[in-house]
Amino acid sequence: MSQADPDGTAPEGRVAGDGVAPTVLAQERRLHRDLGFWGLTAIGFSNIVGSGWLFAAMYAAQTAGPAALLSWIGAGLLCALVALVMIELGATRPEGGGTVRWPLYASGRLVGTLVGWSVLLSVGGTAAEISAIMQYMAHYWPAIYNGHTLTASGLGVAAGLSVLLTALNWFAVRLFARLNNLVSVFKVVVPIVTVVALFASGWHSGRLTDHGGFAPYGYAACLTALAGGGIVYSVNGFQAPLDFSAETPNPRRTIPASVLTGIAMALLMYLALQVAFLFSVPEQLLGHGWRGVSFDSPFGQLALILNLHWLSSLLYADAVLSPGGSAYVGVAIDARHTYALAKNGTIPRFFMQVDPRSGIPRRALLLNLVVIVLFLLPFGGWQSIVRVMGDMYLLIYAASAVAVAVFRADPGGAGTAGWVPGLRWIAPLSFVVSSEFVYWSGWHDLRLALPLVLAGLVLFVTMWRPDHGSSLAGELRTGTWMVVYLGVLTLLSWLGTFKGSGRLPAPYDSVTVAAVSLAVFFWAVRSGVRQLTAERLRALAV
Image (tube, rainbow, N blue to C red; front, side, top):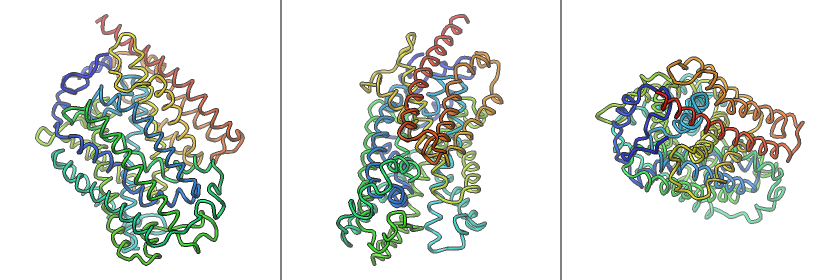
């Protein structure tokens, strides 16, 4: 395997039997290289800071009390670990939709298809942002919600928003970046104003020790809050600049700095918001502890209770702009993912077409619009969507950890440039932590999420062709680790203590997940290296 070409486009000859390398490269070169450091940083920050800041502080407090602060710090550590792995890949192997391409290169078509399928399903994350907008709009227009489910009129409005976001992404990436930069400035200012106003309205001392103490529901609740409280979803999105790595003129310099800067900015903001929420909730609302604190629109209603009507008006306006900005970026990222899936052959190549004038994969945009609207149908509210979507997207992080280890271990390839030191231990640790975050989501969510990903096996068999260069049995052997991995995580989730049966008590359940994940990681790396070696031998034979 060779490294990325000097022009920043990853070579397509890595997947044996691809057979369409000139076509794929022609589309890749249509992408415009107009994004610099600030544009990429704004993309990462805007993708992280969406509806999460409006809801996650309350959900996290309900789940873990003041100990939710530890959950945010833990999520930041996960971001740092996974980001280092993905920065190495993005800086040394830049490509449009790279997070979808790297698992295919390293682990074969079965893994590439399963990861790609999970990414296609995670388009529902954009539906979550639209759902968040709708929940705040319900403050002024109650008819759009029936309980926690969109009504027919609400669904029509949500579909209209989806069409608008798609239309705004229809034009050149430079225009997209400029609009997003403006939105990002507003998304920084409003949370800062919110924190300052809540602190000024009244500081209730003792909140870290009263009402059950710092960890009223136990420290295990900190783990549950990571996914169930929406924290994983809220800090997710830091990888966004990587999917635009083919649209920046100097990815090796701009990608690492933009990813890390976006993470640092977002994490500091989330911690400040969590502290402000914990110390400003009125005492009379804590009669039943933190689990009794419940708002449909947390910060907006809290501002009204504190007689901060001007802040409430600002927050309800931002409730449209902030998730809307994140959804705006999400639509752009989803288009790059779908474009990459078409390059992989996971979906028809028809969706790979890039418009030569705008540099935008417009067919991919239209496909994602359909998927977004479909995801608005079965899920009732923001938290219902993010529970499932966050679990699915974490598979990209796990697969990327395997990919970077495979590239570095491949004795016959160029490996990676070694931009990040310590990847020998960072990669397996990143894989284990990603697995734990999936497991901590709880059986209630994983019983739906993981079987949905495994349904991608049907897509793999449907899309597989004999001219791919290797036998179907060989592809199955190479990618079996992912199927076993998903199956074992599902089983352990049912056995464990995170909304499971409790047959495997804590902390042995999390320890078991770590041990199994580590074993699967080394199995996956060995399978990937064997696959690359076999591809190279087949190429030499030809």
